[in-house]
Image 1: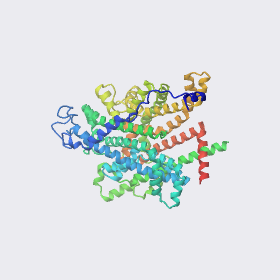
Image 2: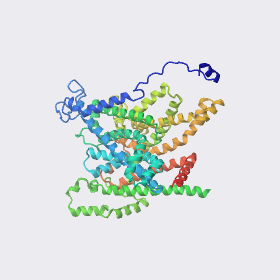
Image 3: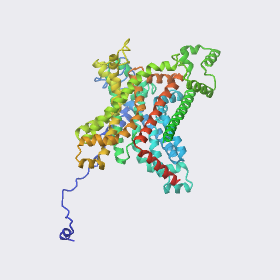
Image 4: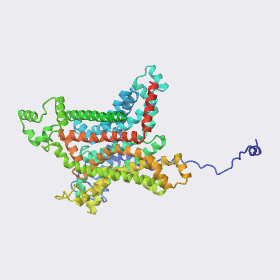
Length: 295
Length: 335
């Protein structure tokens, strides 16, 4: 049909506007955060290649020294070079962040799935239990777990943080599983004798993974923050095991002597990391369009 | 009708009591099963020099030698009569130990909650009013950054700036020595910890308000009110805000314990004599009776606030109850 025909039918011909702009691949992605985070992670992983001093060596002639040419970020009260230990210590902080998240996610997925698939009364009991767990201050649970597990190390701290931070994810998993539990493919898998973990892994997990992804990323952030808080308060890693938190645990002394670099520099590393992870998490949330939790 | 009301609140009360009971059992068992020597907190270093007989006598005297369930029943019957036992460390009735500090924590946490409640509302409305303009964007960015900063580090930086560099505010304690009744002195000591508590939590709630209002202003009734000729301000405050309030109230009720928990860390950094430092000590040094009372107290606040949120929701906004009923119906049909 020609233009005349369109005009008769009351449809205007397409006007030739400017061609749609080519979308840049990085639009809307948190590129700065990803780059910064990648930089920090790589720098921590391969810190041995570029740090000038041995991070555990205590230089008794140069303790409490302000940032200068020899000590880029200064030295702490034990005479350790802050530039070296900030990279070196990041390893443990990040490791704890990731392993604690792995633990909490595993607990949350299993617990949420059990609660979602269980009969209504059991579900109510389980949910009530999580509420009770939430009502004990996290700090107390962590102290108790630390007391049971003995001298704090990376594993015990990851465990303690992981075991106190799974409830949020578990609630989302439960809601999602509740919606899926009576769909045909789950019923079919059940009829064919699929076990709990088989159904969870093959059928349920692929469906809810995108809606918990954002929470998982946020859990990494919370775990890193929790580690630093615990170490700062003296229930996490001891000061001789270097992490961002244990570096900050010396800051009480630093306050007295006014050595700002001991407080600000490790803290800035910590905050930048947390900010990058948060930005990535927020982007993921928008991406999956998962409804923001109201709690 | 009155009967139904009675049943409704009776049920809530029952849930509350059951939760507290379960909580007390869990805490009691976990605390006793955790390794560590409770005698150390009572006799401090002298424990190491004790002979086995003396130890047995001391345990007998403190009631630690019986099986755990016997101890629990004894504790429970005492607690129901208002006797929560003595603190091993302070060697005084735990209620006495807690009393003075509870006031301090309530002063910090309670005022903090009220400030957060009001300021978050204001900030949220402000952001929603100027949606996507520069003011909104700046506040959003700043909020995201501040909410990322761990509480203890923010406190440290605040101490560094205001107490060490500028020397305008005190860095620790709740009052200067010998001035525990001087109100002005107390307020000066409260400024730093209070602002940390408020700043740290503010954005979370303000952002929630902002999003809820933005959802609300896209509803059809706003269009109707506008076509009637209502002013923007009137629509916002008369209609949108009113719809947002119930969920905000219930969320705030749930978040009270969260904010109180946040004061624990701030209390430790500022060495503010409150509940936080006390519960940390009691858990570390196996001061069982003190630990129990603190856990029950915080647990009671949490559960009470949760129930309060439920009641607010169900009373002010009955749709939530209707939804639940619908869900139940659905489940019944499927099952």
